[in-house]
Every structure is written in structure tokens, then in C-alpha cells.
Length: 443
Image 1: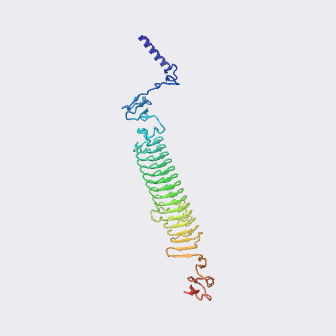
Image 2: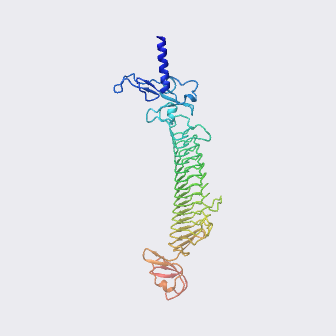
Image 3: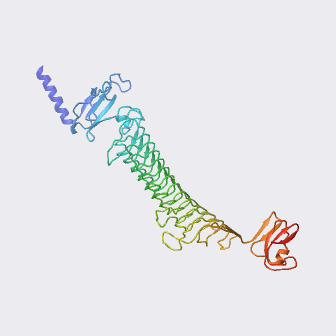
């Protein structure tokens, strides 16, 4: 009997060695191991395979020969219940996905909490996360990674989508980074929003900045409360704060300036140090501060209108309103044309004050004339009217000097005041005359 049994075992082993297939409940195995149920249509509740059960992972890690080894964790110990396989490349037990919010690169799965605290998708995404349920989202290669310092990321409620977005973040929170290298260098900055390639890419600890567009606020490191919309807007800003730049290259060269508002393509583009300036319109105030002087002579200007004040490089306290008001021909990129240095001017109207190179002047006109309809000098408190002044649609007072004939043609009222340059029967002497009691009186 023993001989027969040994012979049978030898025969089975030898035959299996020959065909390299094992069949259980089947005589025609279709693979190395083929297990058939008792009845495929109506299986029994014992049909199946029981993988080895464990309460805890082995104290000694498996090796390369066990790569892919499968176990079932009961949940009675530290690890969460479920199937795990050994990944020798990472020397860790990897859980199987059980439901749609269980992703193998979601930190809530790795820490066993299954609470959906953080989610990372992409190679290296979230590698430095401290698994403290900080509700971060990182999508893309090295997003929220801290690949250089490898410091545990304790930042909370950040969203990073794109290659290396928020890559170095360690403690910054409530940031939104969408686009390649957005907020790449951020470590502790908070409440920032960066959308577009390289937007806020060098920000370290700046707060409450909004950058939308290619390379917007790209050089910012510590600046706060800035808003930049448009390619390269506030591109060079490092520490300037409370600036608003809307338009391509708007405030593009600003580094230290604060409280500036710039709306329009290249408006206030070359401003570096100037503060409290407002420019609205393409190229408005474009050249301001182009001399790179770290002085206080580029502040408190208002330029409204395309190309208004576009040649002023060292100016302050100006108000220009109108297309090319206070404008000129200076080009800071080629250093051609005439650069202007003037302050304290008020120019209102199309091309008004365009020919004026002085300071403290008033121009109100709709052309680039040097004799505007209304001219004033704030330094001497003088005002000139180059035209007719009509009061209450009745009387016209001519600026300059009047001949006796011109004065006689006026419809005068009490209180009129004129200067007569010739004589006639009414105006018997040259000089100042006033109208009083129904007649002209020599003053």
C-alpha cells in the first residue's frame, strides 16, 4: 500500500513537472494554477481562495524575492483592514483600492485614516506631506513636494495643479497655484492665488497676492497685497506691496514701489521705486522712473488716457487726463526721444501740455498748442484765458487788451472790468475801465 501511494505521488509530481500546470477541481488546467469552483453557475459559499491573514505586518520586511507578495490584514492590529501587496521598490506595503476616494497616492490612505484629508496625483506629488490631515490637493510632477529641503509640509488647505507648483511649500496655507512652476519657491506665504506659467514662481513668504497670467509677479519674494493680471504684469516686483497691475507688462519693472494702480498694456511699465501712482490706458506713464533713481521724485502722479505722461521719467504730483496728455516721444527701451522731468502739472484734454517741459502749469485744451484755452501757473498764481469768456450767456469778456471800438461794442453790466488800449468819445484815456451805474468809469 505504501509503495502504491509513493508511486502515485511520484507520478503526479513528475507529470506536473513535465506540463508545469496544476489543476484543482479540473483535469484540464489552463494556467500554471487553475482552480475551478464547485459549480460556476451556482457556486457554494466556500468556493474561493483564502489569502494568508495577518493582524500586523511582519517585524522584518520582506525582500526582493517576495516582491508582489499578497496578504490580507484583518484590521485587528494597527494597519487598516484590506488586501496589501509588498512593493520592494519602495519597501512598503501598498493597500488595494477599495472605493473611489481611496487612491494609493492619497495621504489619507497611507496614514490609514481614510478621511480624505489630502490628495496627491503625479510623480513626487506630496512626498513631503506630514500626513496630518491638512487637506492639501497636489496634482502634477513634484506638486507640493519640497524636493530640495525634504522638510515635512505642514501647510493647510493648499491647491497645487501643475508641474512643480508649490513645490517647496513647508508651512504656507490657503494658497492656490495652477500652472507650471506657479508658487514654486513658496515656503510660508499664505493666501496667494497664482494662475499661469511661472506666476508668483519666486514667492517665498509674500501674502495675499493675486497673479493671473504668464510670469505675473514672477520675481515677487516678500511683496504683499499685490494684484497682477496680464502677461508679465508686476513681473520684476520683489518687495513692493499693495500694487494693482492689469495689462501685459503693466508695472512690469516695478521692484520696490507701493500703492500703485496701473491699468493698460505697459502702463507704468518702467516704474521701479515710485509710489502712489495711478495710470489708466495703454502706455500711460510708461517711462516713469526709467532713470532708476531711488529718490522720492516719481510719486503721486495720475495719468488717465492712452500714452498720457509716457515720456515723464522723473516726475511727481502731476495730473494728466486725455489721450497723450503730457505725452511725448521718449522711448525708454531704445533711449531715443526727449525724456521729461516735470512735476506739479495739471493737463486736461487731448494732447494737452504735450509741448510743455516746465512744472506747476495748468493746461486745458483739446490740442497740443502752447497757448491753451485756459493756461495757469501755480507758482505765480496767474491764469490766462486765450479766447472769449461768456458769463450767463450775456456778456463776453475778451482776454488781453481791448480797443476803444471793441469796448464800445460790449453789452456791459455793472461790475464789468476791462483794459482799453485806444480812445474814442466814450473811452477818453487808455487804461482800466469799469462799468457802474449804467456807464463806463475810468479807474
